[in-house]
Length: 132
Image (cartoon, rainbow, N blue to C red; front, side, top):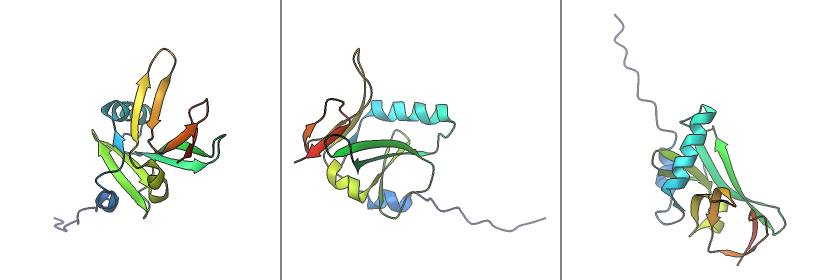
């Protein structure tokens, strides 16, 4: 009989969770619910969603929403809403402080929406923006 004790596997998200500032970004239940559905459809319900910004687009910056299968990076913040993990890197976080990340479904638009108080202007597509 094997009585070897196997140590608990450390939570790869623990450090990113502890690093995350309490006030930063608001993620709505609608956004979390839609993200959870997309993760389940993809067959990776335990993966995370990465939120961020990147240089580019017609206004200077573009928003990023993508699946993240890898553990958090050393400079990531983790926010969990309704069991869904959202990762944001520190560089993007600076431009996203105060943002509400939502999911909308209207006659004219269906998808994730960033409501960012730091936006000075955005282009017609709504995916790129400049900051104040």
